[in-house]
Length: 70
Image (cartoon, rainbow, N blue to C red):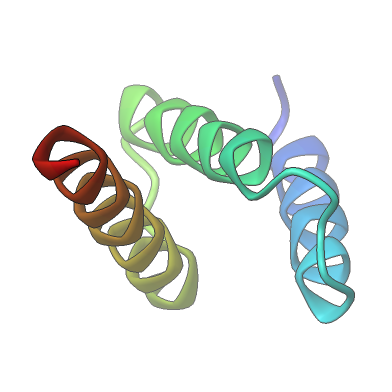
């Protein structure tokens, strides 16, 4: 995949973040996959997406821990 294609897909993901996604877990997975593509190509990772991916990951872990305690 060309770098311009990746940039376009990242722009789409960022635009989706401006409005609340229907399924935050799906958004998390898409960001995770996109970051992995960047890593595989040896490209620098966008800091804002890395931060969002980490925050969503922590959110889902907290939800999972809370569900186990019930």
